[in-house]
Image 1 (cartoon, rainbow, N blue to C red):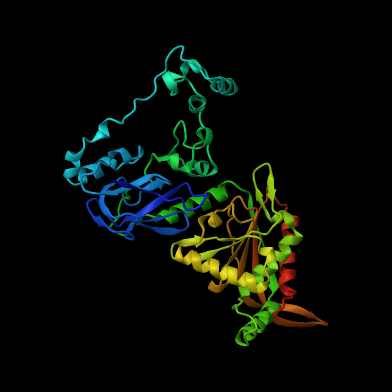
Image 2 (tube, helix red, strand yellow; image 1 turned 90 degrees about the vertical axis):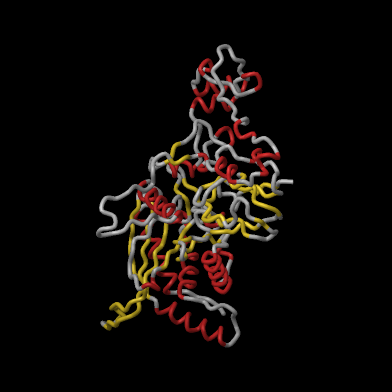
Length: 447
């Protein structure tokens, strides 16, 4: 029998995935365990292995198509079996795939591709209206006489009224539609007709030919992930009041702790290579616990203030910047935090980190460290809806008053705090940033 392959759902926050490459084409033989296609979410990449043996009868999409999760992607079975009944309604490439199937498939069963088309519901005068639909129509001011019913015998049901009124949109759908490149349907596939990101369709090209290409320059399309990051950064700056404060912290203490940790590792007293960044994150967690308002999400006219520190840490990967969230980081000691941070970074670079923990809503506060690149100060961009992000710069020698008229050059670490001024005032942001410096300069840990 024919078996359908669906787009897996990688985490509760993932609505759709982009196929980067189909490894198997129509007519190819497939064994259990063969890679059928590779795909990616906005942050992670995966490969789909075949759970069936047979021949690829149909492939309903093309490389680089964005496919809603749980949608039929391919059909695997025996040559000559029918597959048209598995074609998803939104698959643009369903017909070409069907034509490319072996000739036996055409004779084995009549192709019902033209038959399943369901005519759009028509407005019928005097059509029955369900009580729920009538109540919703009254709330939304919809004239049911102008609504097409899709219920039994043309009955107007609630979803018809919601469609006529214009459906609500999820947060992802709102963000995607912000630049005007997507068109939303009258009714979405979510609860009560909510329009999700997977329901949006591109209505204007994301890239156009540029005059002069090939003479003095070349044009390269952005990768799928780069486009998502670009859109996220643009939306962040457009939809928040961002301001950055900068301050230096005496780094002598963390440098001494780093040497102490290396010695403890060599002597076998600890089993983690604790870095400067690990110590900084540990100090930041302590400072956050004294300023709970920075550990928050700004929701426009409300704030979500967290009781636990869900620390986001920016990780540079070949595919772009990723920010994994470390849940309840305040419960970890320095060794445990170091291990978790290293594991998260490794999984991000492999593309195997849990997509739910890469969502901007998974973390309550983010740390981005560019010190390893020699950057002294920078203005990090908020990962909305988070209220704050701390940028950590490199360590450089700066003059300091040691007392009694004595000045000396000591190592200083640059700290840059970007915050949403809608949620946090400048005074509070400054006091928090100063507390981070105090924690770094007076950090106490046991090995």
